Image 1: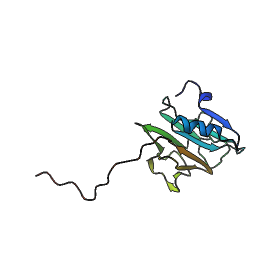
Image 2: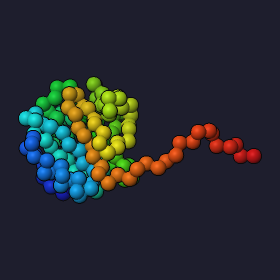
Image 3: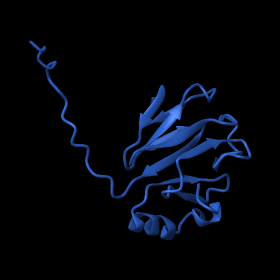
Image 4: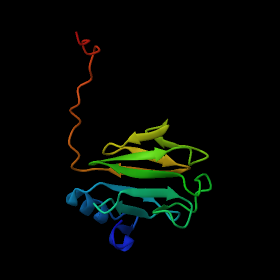
Length: 145
């Protein structure tokens, strides 16, 4: 975790995209959301972060205390290599959604995807994310013989 959350969590006026533009320029993955007063928040997922908790609880890294549909500990964002995944292993009562689909266990996040916890939407950004070049096998591999 970074030495100071103040270094990574920024309070941004609803109409001021400065912090988002700066985060995009730096290229590190980040998450944005609107707080109870509709102010945009930005959390940069610098290299010090391995896990980020989301929930209503006071110790959560992304605190959503105003959203009654969010559990105290709702979900986690977890770094896996150079990628990030959202994890909801039954932590939340109402579920975590990415692109409208409920997350069962964990799901890799892609640049621009929207997460929903309770009534709050969060956007995951990874500005310099390389395209996924994994090819999908159309048939099973040949059996050794």
